[in-house]
Image 1 (cartoon, rainbow, N blue to C red):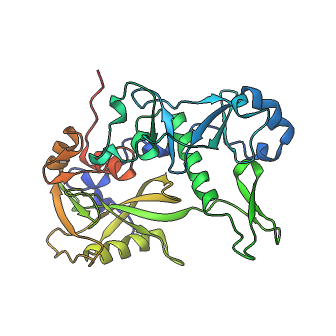
Image 2 (image 1 turned 60 degrees about the vertical axis):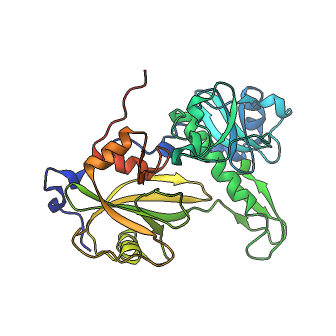
Image 3 (image 1 turned 135 degrees about the vertical axis):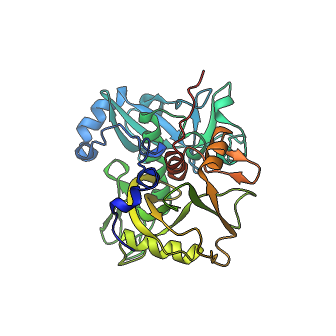
Length: 336
């Protein structure tokens, strides 16, 4: 593996592409207000004008018809002060935003329409509960960031109920941004797991796509894997590609990143070049199929809503989808 060089900008500049826009879940605009998390007086003072979103244990929240806006409520609906389980999301235009855990109705959507499963939130005509995977790309910048942060924090709280040192119960503190051990007094903060995701191409008009055995039929995406202890991100790219499909890569280059709170990852996007003539060696039990796909075919699939016979691409909420769109030079048509 080598550092990125001008060599990867040959053949029409295809290899030198950049992300056309921020990934859907990286568009947060709110001021997170870290110093405010311990300011009880200020939190109480701003509570009456704050807004609150409710998120259930599966990461679902109520969204407006069409899936483009969150349904939020006045903070005073939840009492005269923030509940103990509330998390402070930040401030936007002078308004404090919080999230509280709640319960969705029994008919709340659970499937991700981006893979052709479940109802399409863009077609709803009444307020409906959906998860972040379903509506993350439909929400505006501010609201996408709010829901991403809320889902991230609540996922962490659900798995951090006991101290990793002494095993005693922990309690939520600092407006939901830390947990305090009731036994040894240790304070713990939200954890994020680093993972690389890499678009492997040939430096021209071919991109490598693969599918896992558990995915829906015909679903393909780019390669990804978790960073190991003592490993650089670039080394992780080379190792994961070699392990999953048996290819050596070069011209590794950073593209961008996106939080992926399922349950607590940060996806760090790269592009790399490989030889399409080299044999593919698929990781047994991990990669069911891999194939080189042309730019024209990717564009055709994107124009068809991400789905062609034999090729279902990742949806707009994922950084994988944004990376493929950017590599293909495809731009989503304006909605009429």
